[in-house]
Image 1 (cartoon, rainbow, N blue to C red):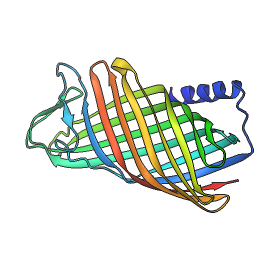
Image 2: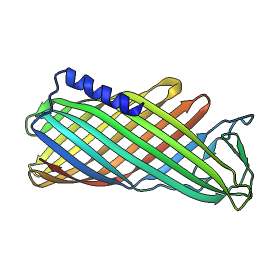
Image 3: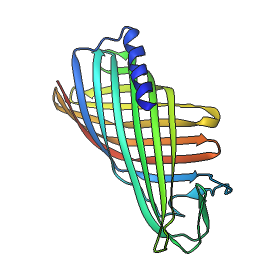
Image 4: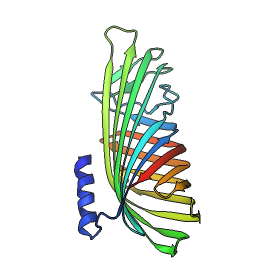
Length: 253
């Protein structure tokens, strides 16, 4: 479903007259994240427990790579595709009984947890406002898609209990973007986009940073990013907040 939505969004952008342009930029980033999250998965006759993944399960933030492919379609317009895989794991002796996807994990038992998050997006960034060669400001139209897969497993017991739950979320979002040129080699950038979707949840993604261009077709960047997500389906839910600094490098060709 995520692939279908992203391809559809790209088709819409192209039919609106955004032609793939003169320059392509390939960027790689590394994000150092701090994790805050809760989740619940119902199953069978058990209603499910609201689980704090750090306090209850011992999960911690994990560093995450990101790849971005940007097509510059004009001086103020670009189309961007981005993908971020996130993987969190932990193991802890739980201090209370936890019900997850129809299985009860007893207090004082050892529980191993594995959470994978796939985050993909495609967007059009258009910055028609500002001061030539100094400031650009405009909007973002983007489709964001998440797939969260969580697995809990008992350790040291026979038979082992293992349960998994999956939550998808795909949303169109809007936002704002700003680029400020302090010097021909030093740029500041900031953007934020998101959208609430009622009972389905919400996605908010925001970042700010500095970009250094030692040569015209190569850049280094560093900044800070916050990602806030909530997905809900039939009483199951996941709330994830990730924040932290990032570094990156890009090449234009």
